[in-house]
Length: 288
Image (cartoon, rainbow, N blue to C red; front, side):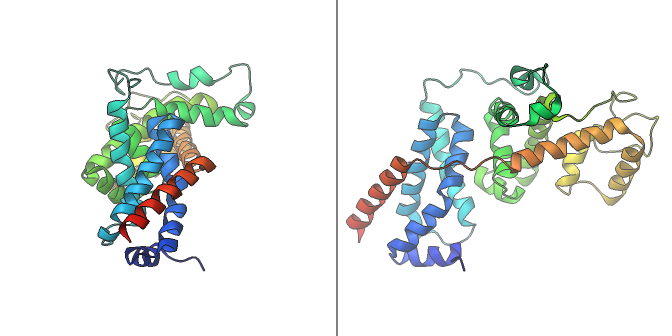
């Protein structure tokens, strides 16, 4: 059986180098993926990984288990991502907000209109479309989507990593999901008929077709986070049963989130692993 994180932490805090090495090795690929998606540069991601793992080794004795090991690691990694971004001469002077961006522009940059939806979904193209859509999000939205939908943290864990309220995390998450879904729609092969009428507020769902459609994508995202009441949920289900347009929108959001969850886990370069081990070895030797 695999040794638990809690056991490894306890052993590492007593100076067990093997436990520390196993703990860091277990989490290094996720930290590396987080760095790649946030910094969008392999060299920066390597630096983030090395700095994060070394910082974890230095502070492991202070870890008291108030949060999960993964939350602790992502918190450290995020702090280095922010520093890296501030120092980078390639950082854009001004971020493009979600309100200013034309929906679907990201996907049109990578989509080939001459290919069928099935062909578009095959291979690297859909992965690149997702990467492009996530990469074009403002960092404040990208962080919550990556941590929640790619790395799989709970909303409270994301809030802890980012120092936000759970409500603020969910608000950003819904906007990020809507933006990424809109970017991927041309590639998903899920037809979207126009809504029957202008969208109604996301807080309510009409009971059937022929009335104003709700902002169904955000409403469905809120449903996935357990934010809507049983009555609103029931009304939403009735509306979806009679509204193919809204049903297709929900289907495309579900497909988008499945693609996020299935994001490939990168291999950490051997040179980076060797460099990290050497740095940790020196640190342990100096403090043993």
